[in-house]
Length: 276
Ligand SMILES: C[S@@+](CC[C@H](N)C(=O)[O-])C[C@H]1O[C@@H](n2cnc3c(N)ncnc32)[C@H](O)[C@@H]1O
Image (cartoon, rainbow, N blue to C red; front, top):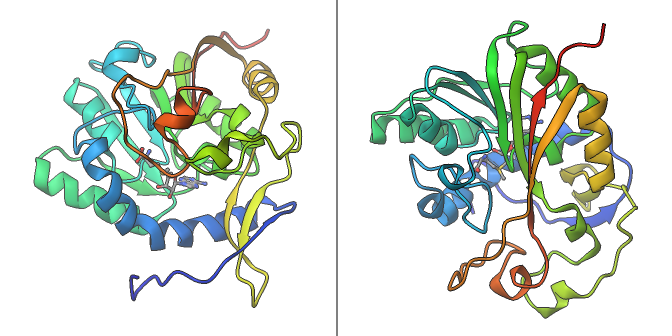
């Protein structure tokens, strides 16, 4: 346990949570968890590496972002900036954005050790500290999007900072996973929760009742409606298959489950012309 950011005991619940509570839970939670996250997953992610999720699909394979050389790129929920660092290695000017101070300290550590720096800012995906029409590409690899309540605000901000015709791509826990317990073993294969119940998953401090971690769920239809409603043309919905011989367990992701049901969804979309 980290003395600076000790893990509180938690109580798991499903209840409505607004944006302010989501943010005040998730920032400190990622500060507490960052050291363990990077120690556990850093090697798999690669210091200059871009994977879209636990299946190991890389952007080099997927090509969802489109051409990168010479482009201005923003990563939402960039963590230690591994993806943005890879994007920089492809000739783009990528910038990281994350809510967690500790995650950004890890990004700075990797800047130093790799010699490839990702300029990064501490902010939330729902209020982007950038001018209008600054980026050609905005992306998010399991970053901020499933942690925000005001997803409409995050999408509106993404639209604002993108240039016309810009790309938006992101990976999330595959929405169908919501119905299963988040367990890598066989108990994670029995549906126990309604797919259509959007009530957030909340971990709370049992003494104060304050949320300490929040995750928000949207159905596939919700995502399509949100993207289309913000002027995006959806070009990709990748559901990476679990690769043969890949035995790595990442939280609730495992070969046992991954061979049967998708764990990750990767959306790609292009910003269409503004309505007249
Ligand atoms: C699962 S990690 C993924 C980090 C990185 N993309 C990776 O692949 O390692 C999720 C990240 O989203 C960040 N995050 C959570 N809520 C956020 C928000 N509202 N705005 C920006 N970042 C947020 C967390 O701090 C954390 O670093």
